[in-house]
Amino acid sequence: MTATDPALTALAQGWCALSALHGRIETHIERALQAKHDLSVREYSLLDVLSRQHDGEGGHLQMKQVADAVVLSQSATTRLVTRLEDRGLLERYLCPTDRRGIYTNVTEAGLLLLEEARPTNDAALREALNDASQVPELAPLVRVVESPHVPA
Amino acid sequence: MTATDPALTALAQGWCALSALHGRIETHIERALQAKHDLSVREYSLLDVLSRQHDGEGGHLQMKQVADAVVLSQSATTRLVTRLEDRGLLERYLCPTDRRGIYTNVTEAGLLLLEEARPTNDAALREALNDASQVPELAPLVRVVESPHVPA
DNA sequence: GCGCTTTGCGTGCCATCACAATAATTGCAG
DNA sequence: CTGCAATTATTGTGATGGCACGCAAAGCGC
Image 1: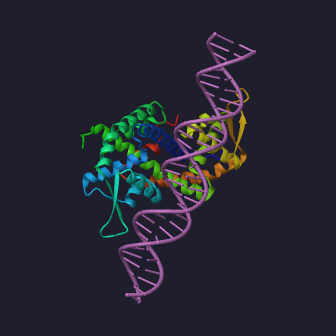
Image 2: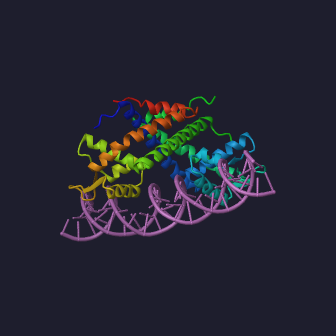
Image 3: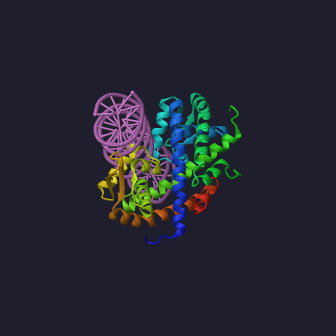
């Protein structure tokens, strides 16, 4: 058994639980969004992030910032944005001061679809959480997700 | 803005944090395992799960149980097991009582590689957690991962 | 202004995954 | 015993992601 450190074993258990919970929720939401709105979790997430930026200011993010927000590689982000742009949900436009930078902006259609899909997303999320709270290993994580810290 | 329910907004924030944390950790561990042991996170996870079963009893799981454990579709599980079998890390054998069922067993080489990769995995996990604990939104989740409920 | 390095984005290629369809086996009703 | 539904694993197909690479633009030293 090579007598692994018990503290590390605990960490591994926690990570395993986190991974399992994430997978369950993602799968559940994915099916719901896909069936009702032809959206993937990533696509929904991107629209959501961009729309939140919109609330604050100009409503635009550079590709790199987007990639960081959704935890994707740059190449995957390029394709994700391209897909949504082709569907008319997003718009690209060049940064005037730095022509390398490319901003993305949610279109009216994108906002519409987002608000339309939000209830589906939230409902599926709640279902998945309720489901997962029945599993002892996942319950503590579920509680934290349900009551996020304190956003300053 | 359609005035979304604040409780649901909180849920969405929690889910977003969970997703971000998972992505960060997975990416970090993935690179470490890939570089040092030519293993993906999923492959490591599968070896780990199977080896734990081995501790308990016969050390075998059916494909379906495996799929559930690692949160993958049946088809992906088939191919994951096939890949590891081709590398000599796993073995398949038919269930004697139900010839539909197929058990998987970790080989000596598999156990060896697993124990070899475990420190890499644990170190990368700790790094990722320490890193994430600096981000306010992720900190509460990190704490739960670090101290899972009750170690029985 | 010229050339080199850095940065940001897009593309080719391959690996992996989910869904649908298929094959093999079991269980059950009649 | 026969036929049909249910279960389990596998395979075909299309979609998505990551890495390596290339191109364009900006920054910098001279």
